Length: 407
Image (tube, helix red, strand yellow):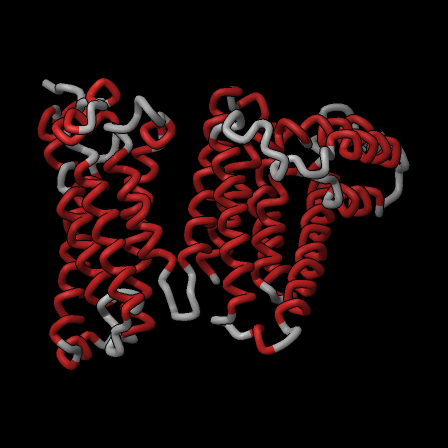
């Protein structure tokens, strides 16, 4: 759950540079101008602090309501178990919806006419509430900024829906509240300093940060779909998926350019998630008692070794992911980053040998084997996409993007 909250908070932080600045930035500036208690040139820290605390409190209350409603639905019968069809259905629906929202955030034209993205057409309601709030801000009372913040949190917002959907999926009043609280905290730095920092970021930079938030939404959706009744480590899957996108970003860039724009972010993100995954394994599985490795079955030992080697292969690429190092190393830089290919293979071996949903179970089932073979096929597809000969075989060589030649 901690990883979920961190991702939601990161989504709020990155998305706030684009969406929040565009929709709520002018509103925040209007509040500042309307605060007559301020001396000329004085920075309205107290006003904005209370305003944003009220907004975050509103988010948390809404999250508690949404999570509480989800818990009532889940507790409605025998289908309330963690592995129940009903709960898995909620997770699948939530995951798909988050993926759609993430893709729309990455590229707004993808689902421009897709009705689920704009189900309520909230623009008029947003405008009416905004005007009413500006009028309210003219009232000079100590509770005005808190009240404004509470109302501000009720404004319909497509970006906010992402966090609300995740809060509903928790099916728990407390977790729903924490989800929306984490989202609000993520947006806090930008909205607090909007009057001071807006000019520091170009429109292009804000757009890039907002779309990066879309990638996090997409990742949250994918990880939600991957969750089952068994314990599945989000960070391990997140690292694997990020590394896969890193490896296919260049060859498919003529068909889909977005992964290439964020390839460095995806690659470094894969390494960071792998580090977190390793720490989690040492803490939860071994409890920092490495002698436990000796008592594991040989299959699981090999899986652990494969994962460790994969992490070692990712280190050189991660520490050289800087422009000046790339220029300095030249052609050697590409060779270093090609270590990501064997790293991916080792990660897949690690997951297959020790993963509870693949070949790592003691009571192996047909579906475990099926998932394992599908996993292998997807990995092979990722690796084959990198070769021009495969594209030529399919008559698609004109869409293939070859690596740049470096001196």
